[in-house]
Image (cartoon, rainbow, N blue to C red):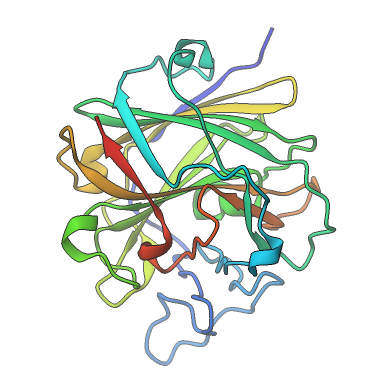
Length: 282
């Protein structure tokens, strides 16, 4: 019988190490206080203990070949049962994230990651379902460190119509979704929020994101319900927000390293919302 892991993460305050990401082209953590010495950098160019990886976009010749997915996605109304079983999503259109947009220094050139996903909404939540094919599952991290293992990363621009530009702001978010280790370590979520000076830090107000995951024959499935409230969004048909859907891969159990990231948008850059795709609510 499939092992089911379900986690509901109550609103939590950021605590402990809240060192932020290092944006491409910089060497100072985004949340470093004036005069603070940055933490030692890892192979990925990210300070040890940081919340996010500085994932630069690869050159065009490194991108996954066609057929390309649509960077502009449409979501209809549908409220699934969050249990890791995707059978109730059967009638919902599928999307893919095939573009390799980041590789870490430890990447050995192999690629066993295939990412298929679906998205819907209702008045309370934005819902996602993921079917991940991955021959080697590796996730030992929690909190703002889950990007160092097999996981999902969503970039969301909550006010695309109002302030779309090439730098992060307070209405930009990153959602980390982890399936856990599909055994003793349960699924988890983390929310990051942009700042007025273009950085990205742990969301000050925490979150109430719900995650469910279970192993599958070739990898894992994951469902998530993200409250609109956490994103400061009032949903309505016709609303367009920014969205990039990415998956991290780590094929070395026992390690914590972001080796590979794939996205639905080939030119996706972490700190530039103009390079993300869009989501339109029907």
